[in-house]
Image (cartoon, rainbow, N blue to C red; front, side):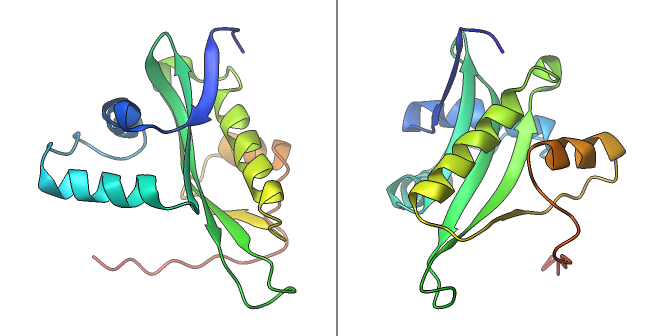
Amino acid sequence: MSDKIEIKELERADIPGLLELYTHLHEETVPAQGERLDGISDRILSDKNYHIIIAVEDGRVVSSCTCIVVPNFTHGLRPYALVENVVTHSGYRKRGLAAACLERALEIAKKENCYKIMLLTGSKKREVHDFYRKCGYSSEDKTGYVMWLE
């Protein structure tokens, strides 16, 4: 990873770059600026349990993941963390950027005293699964299910 890469939490000024990065995940277009986007931005940025971690190189958002800390009544009232939207710009892959973002998510989860951190992937690619295993995640402990609401 280059010295000029910064791993940080999303700030309002980073949102346009993040939305552009999401076109490398599964979005086809960048959402239109407006009241709806502003409202979602305000809600996310004001939520202390919602962390969007980004890798920035030369002012460009090139990798990201979201880490949400969920308060919980079990495991001694300890929260758990969910990771979602792991993505790296196609021109910046294989440089350790997503791993660095996931490492920051892990640091957040530990700081918040989470008892576990989880993620789901829709990818069927072996290299994606190998990457998550290399980052310390296991696919042997739990079974994930998704119900799409659209």
